[in-house]
Length: 153
Image 1 (cartoon, rainbow, N blue to C red):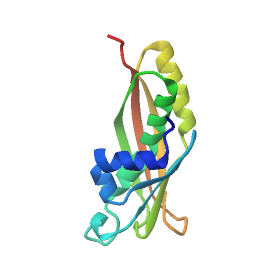
Image 2: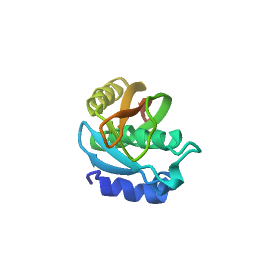
Image 3: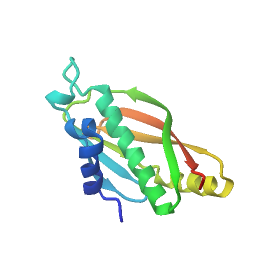
Image 4: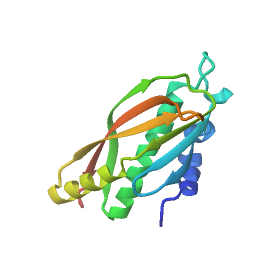
């Protein structure tokens, strides 16, 4: 079964309600790129009338995590995944529709192959860039994902 934006958004509705209710939606996903969008609204704003940093973080993490889930599913292996570290930089007030994009799908392939071959855990740094409707960068998030092939016991 192929991972599609609709399937991911439905999953989020039931399993990650904070993502769903703040308006975060996957717009597209393919082998290398995942795009997520969220509109600044009352429910996801901070006291300064811009998007709360944690909402931006959820949207950014979803771009990297959805790619990770898709690649793990395609591998056919039982692989665990976990965010081990992250950092962010905020460069402009996030208002209007913010689009986050991760273009690091190719990094995952290499790490999964290495994890399967060696049986050892692997880490991958992935980046998601958030831009506003004018194409201006508002934030950049980096996530260090840890993956490991689960033992068959």
